[in-house]
Length: 628
Image (tube, helix red, strand yellow):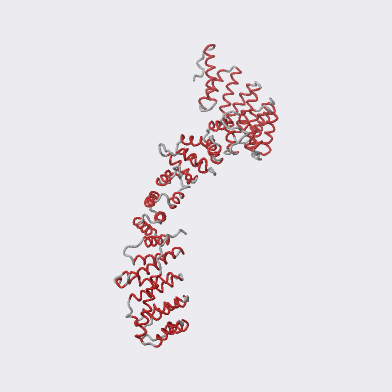
């Protein structure tokens, strides 16, 4: 439940003294006038302090059917004495009897002020017993008397004491979650004042808001309170509650205006912080400008440490929406140093990527991937930066970071995921020997044993290592953890075949590769690569005709696959070895026209140029030659 606003309570002493004096004086005069034996006995019992006897006489008065006597004041005096003696239950009984007596015809001459005082005294006891609804029922006629045409009949003390009790009822009811009672109590209190206090305005508005049936009314009353009392200690809370009420009404613009008011007028309040925190998991395009501005204002050196990583992420994105922001680097460094989960960092990089802020993304990633000091980036933040670089194929950034670190001396910001990505960047750049050191570290030192790591380790060793036995051990390790799925088994088979090629065991290599090619359950890309490797075995054996046949088969397996371009360049070379220049030109031209973005296209262009140059000096091209 939301914390209720602070409500000021007034002292009780003035009421107790004045009320008691009035009741005592009135009862003496009444007893003398009525010359009633029962009333006389009651008065004597009270004078002697015999409350037990007085109570018996009081019960007789309560039960009498004789309506000729007015028992209002005797009952009130008895109730007061019992209250002073600590017998609150008995006192309440006689206070209520006094109230009922004051409503009878024989009490018609009783002054309105006296009736009011008796009701106030009774409501005080009910309030102390937390019977707030009954207390409000008793005070409602009093408020009507004091706030209507008969207001002149009351004095400031009576009004003050009635207001005091209503404030107490409102405050306690708010705390207890009895919002309808609180609303009624504060409403009655406002009726007693020509200019309601901040306590009454806020208390009533708060009760209406918490009751929940009329959020529009609550928002209006809370706004009115803020206009009249902007410096009140509870103003920020009231502003926050205004926002929530406006949200319930669906008033989007009103909600935005109220949020802006809170963040601009009370920026250092807990309510402002709470409002901003509610946007920590919101899409950046859904966050109001006033929230972004508040966050940017908090990025000063003396306040930036108070922002949680989620909010730092929003602040960094917000700073990037401006041409230049003086705190951009400070925000980025703080986020990198304090992000223990990596999620805020990832959200920033993803947002930069989606909004085409490539420069900002790379600038931030550089801070993450290659930290200047070991403690300046958390491992989670660095991992997020490395993963982003991998997704965006920023392998050069990762490779530079790999070059700047010692493989065997990890920094605190390095974890296995970071190291995998550093190793992969070297693989992507064809630096298998450098990559192999990282993969060896991951397997032999870190103890990583997942299939993908073991496979990459085996690939690096097979492609760049000088120890065939070590390469075989790496392959066996990957094979041992490979799942029964044909995909992982095929990957291992391809590695085994490559190692056999390296050992010049071409027949066994082809036998392994042909099993992969024939297995229709294996995806086309792997089968295409296996077929290309079959062509390589023939090429290395200088069996160029067979190599050409094998290379041409790649396209029948995976027509759009990446290995088609590799097979075309190799087929062209094979034709050249056979002296078939025209067929070689066709292969190279086909490669350039179909796979211009391929890494093999540049090599094909060079081969074409070399053939053209040779032809122009020895055999001029015929009309059937391929022209570029």
